[in-house]
Image: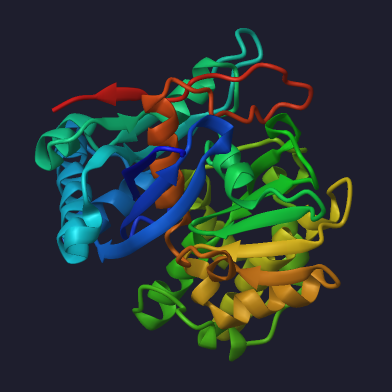
Length: 381
């Protein structure tokens, strides 16, 4: 009988609005792991931490002391979210073997042409998380991927393969988070067949519009976008951005779509005489169209498109994507037994299990890659 273990996953994504926690039961090891979500919890960050974090992600420079404080405070918030979930689950929590923690990537540098190595700056001290929760913490997955010659992920690609591979069906996982991410899993795929990359801005752009025009954190159900009209000429200009012209695999980070980008977007909107409702509608269409174009550019049309992330709650955005990727069937991740916001945390738990076993749970993003790496490092309390 395959052994059974519990792992806790913690994740903070580019949207920088909170921490997601997921308790995961893992049966078996390595590529034979069977994964079951036991519980999940999303907790908003306090307003002060959220504002500071979003300022960093938007490219705003702050003194090192402020970054050090945020490194500590984010780790405390992550540990508190994990502890709250374990307390909520009570007896179901059992004995958690280890914690997987994404940390918060503040900056990401693409691999250099000369030495093929990239760099990243990630905050959210794993030492603080380990001490607070009293369990080993696996972290540093993005840095490990870069050191192995990757482009910094998405490091969840192998986990997506483990969770969603199928002998007959090809699938795409679209993560509608702060950054729009895509994982393509061909039918009967080997982990090295998986392709994953960042498509472009996701809810980070829509959240900025909702805050600017309506003083709301999110366009939660897409009602702001649904109330406006898309400006085709503005959309065409937005699609001309250099990032959309780069062939995958590729990575991006919130700073690329921060304050400077928003200022340029507003300038473009003024030139096209687009009102506030039209700007939100057009920005939402940009995200939906970027997703659809990425899917259409694959080597085959997938049988299924799986939507996950906080942006899935945006009914208007999800509806536009469903229409644009048809005739592929589109489902939310709940169909497969995972919470809408929980996937990244689930993946962190899976990566923690793999790291504890010293198994290379790695799908290198570069075309033609043949080697895999053991991702992350372990910090013990």
